[in-house]
Amino acid sequence: MTGFGAFLGKELTEIRRTWRLWVIPGMLVFFGITSPIIAALTPALVQSMATSQPGLVIRIPPPTARDAYVQFIKSLDQLVLIAIIITGASVVSGERSSGTAILALTKPLSRAAFVVTKILSQTMLLVAATALGTAVCLAVTAVVFDGGDGARLVTAVAVWLVYAVLLVVVMTLFSAAFHSRGAAAGAGLGFYFFTLLLSAWGPAARNSFVGLVLATQKALVIESQSLGWPIATGVVAIGLGAVAAVGIFERQEL
Image 1 (cartoon, helix red, strand yellow):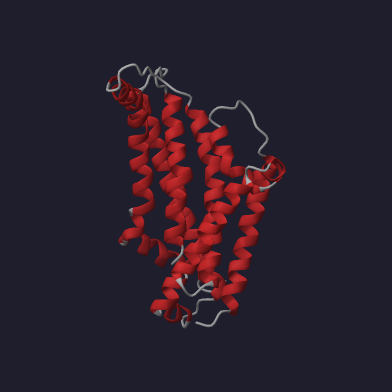
Image 2 (spheres, helix red, strand yellow):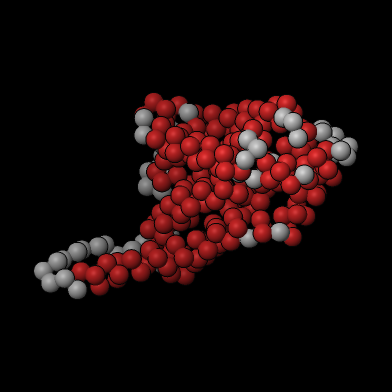
């Protein structure tokens, strides 16, 4: 892949100097800080609502560290994945519409290196941001609550990260396939909601990567679950998606 190293350095420099450095990492750090606080305050808020209505009694068990972890994972499953879709929609189509893709490809840079670099740079940012957000969540939870099984959270986040990286690859594929950012974002949202619906079907959840969608929540409450096939098929899908993205972009007119 001609020009891979130089273009990767350019992408990482661009991440450091533009808004991309703050969107996903900012969200993950924000949720890492607020999730334990929300979990600690939720019972008091519910009780205050109940006292405003005479005769209504709501009993909520005291919050625990697990509640903070569940809140953090919910934010990852919903808001962060949507942010990955929105930001990923323009990763190729945005450069193509602005003309910078043509400029880059007139240099000694292959189309395969262009696409793979986009995937790798986004993945590196996502992994680093996820590790930071998780560390912040563990630290704040340790302050707000007395202890907690941090290993459960790390396991759940690792499972989530496999699906999140797959979504990065899928969005790169859609961004290469569609000239419009809106079309790429729409296709990405369709993929996300389709896998979410399909994950409710037992055989699909047990034997394919769609099982990763619900496995993150289960990892916090179930001692052990079979994730061999979901993770294996997820890794295979990441590889196939990257190959497909390269193949589509190589046939596209700039």
